[in-house]
Image: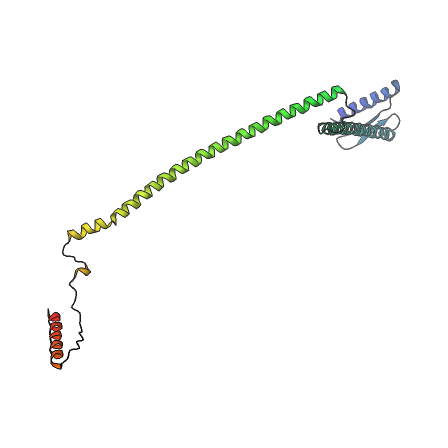
Length: 224
């Protein structure tokens, strides 16, 4: 393995030397063996060739950055021009800065305004139709709720009439006639009342006899 490495290394160094001499090329060759040993060849010196390589590499990188910056600048410029164009169009649609416009540009602007007006009317009509449909839907819902409330009210009214009929005086009178043993308290025979008579008659005998007669009637009434 080591012999193969040595042969290949020597052949590679020989070819590098021939290339630098025959083609007048600047080249550098760096080889590390498996044991970490360094072998190098440089037609103008390895260090000088590496410095040149680094300068070229940085230049290429700088050129790439510059190209990217230029691309961004062009993109920003395009966006700025588009923004200014949109601002001009907006002012024209608002009826401002119409002086510099030609007849053809004014005609195109008029067509744009007519198209925008037609779209606005179409959208307004669509919104109104949606609102009307929503109102119809709410109307149907309210109609259903009204029917339910009406049915509920009729049911409650029927229950109330049933309760009123159960408390009707004619019904109570009929029940009273069915039980003759029950009498109204006012149907009882009134109790005798005390009656006091004041008779002013000449003679003591007549007054005494009438008073006694009244007392007898009073006692008989209570006995009965």
